[in-house]
Image 1: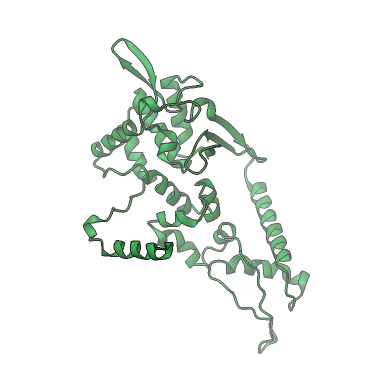
Image 2: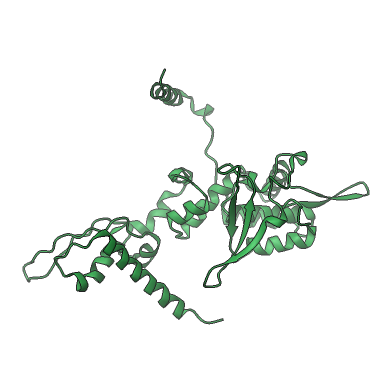
Length: 320
């Protein structure tokens, strides 16, 4: 039996599955859900402080829960799991700060690991504020697990690595105390993807943040209409679309004379047309109304326009 035949049999079996045997879709964590969870956590208690920081770091870094926790207490190995020494700060040319965590071994790259990162947020779910609180309460050592917490057993106090079962148990308890549904751990990554897309972060940027090699992350989306709404109303959201959805092609419809001798053009795409059309308008004085610009020329013109816009935005920002 070849692969095509096997795939056909599997798809047929899936269609014949009764509804009750199918796995339910994993529901996403939201910022509002996390805010409610945090209300039940006492940030002065070591375990709660670590759980609060682990939850927000995993969420805003679009990480897998297994990357920031370990399966069992005995499985912790500093060379394979994230520790405090794997954290560093980064900043770009504009001074925008990020906190970077190097995961020594990940699902996508077991040998070299990958970097995850987040930036400071506004509100009670700010990962930086909660991480600093975690450090204050638990006093980690450089080789400690990133979300280790002080644990007292008898007269002995140790730094206990954060296991996935311990994290899930505490978060589920908090959810029940707040009258919320308990969600699976993978819902953190799904919810983070959804949150950034709803904020208008470009699809390609979210793909990079989540370290997806393909467009598989689109399967996680639960609120397609809300994410796509701005792109479905191009006349109302031109500025938004121009920055979040750059054109993937640059075409030029030959112009023709109208009744009053006006040059007319036909837009191409409701999503990509605005940005590309803006390039056409800006390029017209340089190329002429009947010119057909090359893809390289279009790309250069669009980049120049974007750079000038970003410079204008930075100039308008109040100095600190």
